[in-house]
Length: 83
Image 1 (cartoon, rainbow, N blue to C red):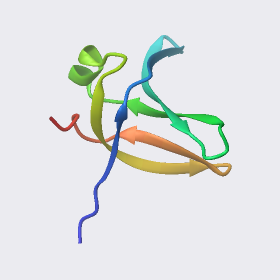
Image 2: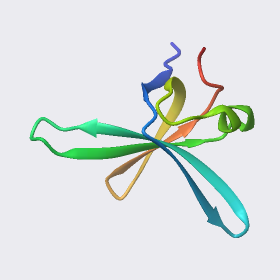
Image 3: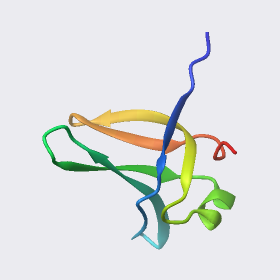
Image 4: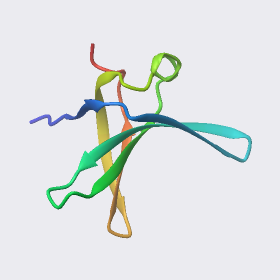
């Protein structure tokens, strides 16, 4: 059985971070909570062509893998954005 997780949403912001002269790009999404709060979810982008075309406000479907560290979930792109 194959299971594929797809992160679906509208990009709120595109964040770029530098570490040791290497740039990492994240697609950020707002997740509204039932209690009125807001949580930011981010997906680490790995496909170079998707990074160049990623824009704020864009609706996307991103295949991801999920990992956890210290009770926090991390999402990483594993395939190109689904068209």
